[in-house]
Amino acid sequence: MTTNDQVVVGTKIVLRLALFVAGAYFLYLIRDVVLTVLFAVLAATALSPAIARLQSLRLSRTAAVIITYAIVFFGGTTILSFFLPLFFSEVKAFLLHWPEYIKRLDVFLSGAEAYLSAIGIDFEREQFFQNIEQGITDGLTNIFSTTVNLFQSFIHGIGFFFLALYLSLEEKGLEKFFLLLTPKEYHAQALSIAARMQGKVSQWLFGQLLLMLIAFALYYLGLSFLGIPYALAIAFFGGIMEIVPYIGPILAAIPAVFVGLLLSPTLGLFVLVFYIIAHQMEAHIIAPQVMKRSAGLNPVALIIAILIGAELAGPLGIILSVPLTMMLSVFVEDILVKRKDIV
Image (cartoon, rainbow, N blue to C red; front, side, top):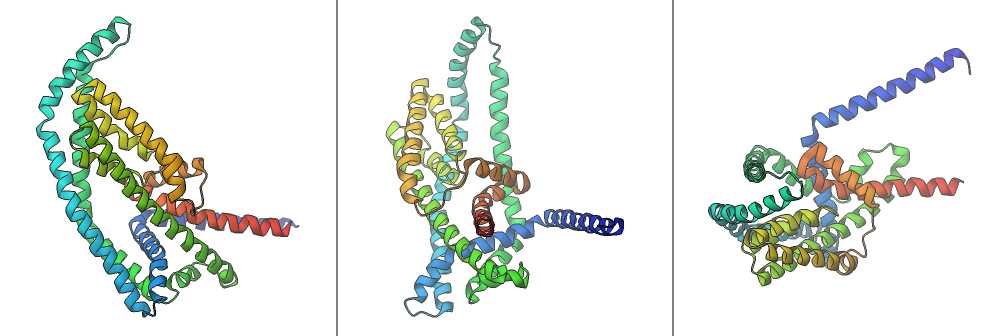
């Protein structure tokens, strides 16, 4: 290779790298739009098996799509309209009783402070109280700001709905979407990958929703049996956290154990033991049965994906990280299989 050829090749590599960096930065700038598109694709992918099942009953695609979306919309609205008022009423009741809980916690921490000081460990309960109150304030502020952002993102919600609806109404709409993103010579491979992605994502989403429901019921029954107040709100939070693998069960246990400790240290210990048992049951008995058709993902890769999603897009990024990692795993598997065949 001559010097001129080396310069040309080097220039092409630099230009491609620059275009890739510029493209990635542009996507980051319009990440709200990208998230809307990804959620629309995810929703259409998850609902495609249900639509196909209705079509097998000799319904037209339009009728199958309308029925599927109507069931999802009205079912989701009904569930939220029932649970959200109860959830916020229990949160309000907790805040009203917070001064009483502070007194109980102060008595417990006074003894803990004296004991820790005796063994040479510095513990300032005043700072501890300030940290707790600051955490509650920040949490309420985040809820408020999230609500405001939801109103501000109304146009994205409309875009999400109509894009998902279009992808579902259009025959092979998802396949056509994937074909738009790939060169013509890779269309056959893209269709194969798209079909496998749809199967994996739809199975994962159904299993995940079922796990969230089971976790909610398990937490609610356990906390009610132990006599923990605000059991519905805590269990509802725990069910939502189920969407975050590995980290979710830990986050779900924190408010339950904290409320138990506010009532008595013994009760807090019982709650902690209950959550450990519940998590072990879920991890080793329930989840393997519910998710047996979903391909497992490498825990390290999944945790890294969750952290990246949280950094780039906050809570929405966390939700998207798992299905996107699953879809990426299909693509990587396809590349590895092709390389193996070549070798």
